[in-house]
Image 1 (cartoon, chains in turn green, blue):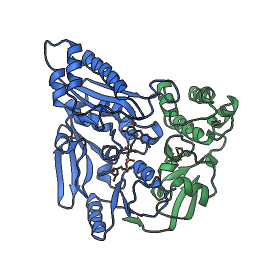
Image 2 (tube, helix red, strand yellow):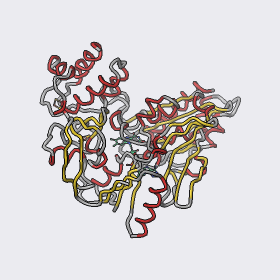
Image 3 (cartoon, chains in turn cyan, green):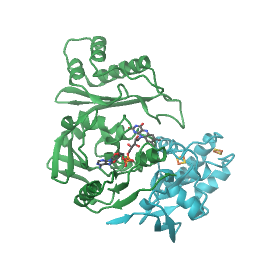
Image 4 (tube, protein in one colour):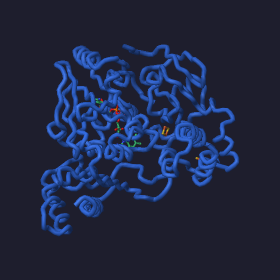
Amino acid sequence: MRSMLREGFLELDVNGEHRKVVARPADTLLHVLRERLGLTGAKPSCKNGDCGACTVLVDGWPIKSCLMLAVEAEGHLITTVEGLKNTPIQKSFVDNFAFQCGYCTSGFLMNCHALAQIHPQASYATMREWLQSNLCRCTSYEEITQAMENVLLKT
Amino acid sequence: MIPFDFEYYRPETATEAVTLYTDLAGRGKNARYFGGGTEIISFCRLYQLYPHAVIDIKGIPELNTFEQKNGKLFIGAAKTLSQIQESNLFPLLNYCGGRVADHTIRNKITLGGNLCAMIPYRETSLALLVSEAELVIQNRKGKKILPISEIFHESLRLEDGDLLMGVHIREECLGAPFVCLKKTSDGNVGYPQDRVGYPVVSVAAMRADNKIQAAFSGVCIFPFRSRTVEEVFNKSNLPREEKIRQAVEVIPAAIHDDMISSAGYREFVLKSMMAEILERLE
Ligand SMILES: Cc1cc2nc3c(=O)[nH]c(=O)nc-3n(C[C@H](O)[C@H](O)[C@H](O)COP(=O)(O)OP(=O)(O)OC[C@H]3O[C@@H](n4cnc5c(N)ncnc54)[C@H](O)[C@@H]3O)c2cc1C
Ligand code: FES
Ligand code: FES
């Protein structure tokens, strides 16, 4: 049985790298990514599961990293926005001006990238259902939806 | 950030998990089974819960299975709401679970965690109440299987240390005709907020053995299935408007009045949902 009783070493697979990091059992994945590993792409905002700014991929599925303990992520493959390189969704966000201030963008990119990978031919209804998980205070929703649709249409 | 420490354990069997729970209790440590952890993490962050230890049950293979056997479907308690939705094995549960929180959180919320949640909505319970599911529970003394009607009264009445292993649903319920409706305080205002949120009213109804069975969340401060409401729904020769009037009179508690919705608006929504249930299932 795996146990972690106090602050100690955790081994995490992040963006294809094996990382050893000191954390507390009660530390969230969001906290460890940002404060211990310097991966600040996942953004803290509500920390309550509402906004999606902290979204990362765990084994390819979008997860709100404020609602996951870092220790839970052991043995799983974590991808943050720093791990996305020249993906179709990144290009599509640029082409469609799908952001303004950019604070929500990394969370949206992770969610959209996962959808394109898991359901490349997703219906409009499925796309809407997935996109509901993220909020954008600058209301770039139309452009984000367009960026996502363009990627789905091309696959 | 959770402002205090707790111990983390990830057992590999259910026996290990329940033994650990008892051992920790014997050492004066208050433990929590940890499914998706969405509620535990949120409540700990807000100082509304302070366990000494969490027992992560996602590593237990038995709690992570779908199995169809002896005329029943078994769904493990650690299955996430998204896994249940993607499996499409029990459409009514897909609908009830598929409107809890949002898609990304449903990748984390487990069936067991939603049924045992402290927040009162527990919307997956509606599908299990109307399909008369059986719950598989393990504790130090062994395993027991109980019909949900025996153990779900307002909430799941587990004893200290009970681990919910999963649920059995009879195969004939899997494809039965159903109606599943939810209204949030945002209503359907369009992307991105359509449907996301705690319910003003959430209902699940199924037609089985030629009768309508219905369960409700959001209406009172707890989810319920009421035989008295069903008796009214299933009366023959009573006009629909009269059925709705009588059904609202016999719901088991006062209609809830809070920030999400006034009692008056809840009653209005409830009545319109009852009309839709009767129209589609009578
Ligand atoms: C933003 C947001 C919106 C939400 N909206 C809704 C909504 O509209 N409707 C709705 O119904 N829910 C909603 N929820 C979900 C709900 O409130 C809980 O967060 C969720 O159901 C808990 O599931 P979990 O698997 O994460 O449980 P956990 O956080 O792991 O556990 C919750 C409780 O159940 C116990 N538990 C877990 N698994 C077991 C088991 N197998 N046996 C015994 N005890 C167990 C735990 O000890 C704990 O006490 C929402 C949550 C969030 C974050
Ligand atoms: S910071 Fe995680 S959902 Fe808002
Ligand atoms: S671009 Fe500013 S919050 Fe979305």
